[in-house]
Image (cartoon, rainbow, N blue to C red; front, side, top):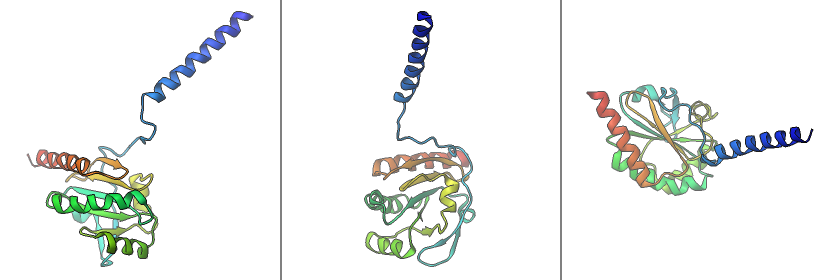
Amino acid sequence: MNWRITASFVVLCLGLLAVLAKGFGSNPREVPFMLKGQAAPPFTLRALDSGMRVSSEQLKGRPMVINFWASWCGPCKMEHPVLEWGAREFGQQAQFMGVVFEDTEENAKQFLSQMGASFPQLIDVNSGVAVSYGVAGVPETYFVDAQGIILGKHVGPIDPQSLAEWMQKLSAGTATAKQ
């Protein structure tokens, strides 16, 4: 009887160790991204400034940088100048777009009047596009190649170096597709 208790305890400890080892080997903040390498979900949204409809279909053939953000998001405020720089620096290589997430138009417009808006900002009224892209929180930035395939995403505020690295990946994908 005593050996059964000991054996059960050993098996339980080994199982617990296996779970802990697997958990310690990964980033607990990293969320699995199932859309990498998949076609970007299509969308049609209204531009915040003009009210015109903007469709992902209109942009096919050109890489896209899609940033989901909100005026109430502190990290979005830190990130916005980087995206403004990126749109100026890399706007010839890719179409930058902001998508307002879980926010009011009035607050988003006020944010942009203070922070700048050099690239299109779209309003996702019911968060349908955010859901289809798998947005877990803001800010999140998605990188879509010219064929409409999601190369990846950046979770949290993006820094200039990371944005430049993603732009190199987008450019490499476009060059490969043209060959």
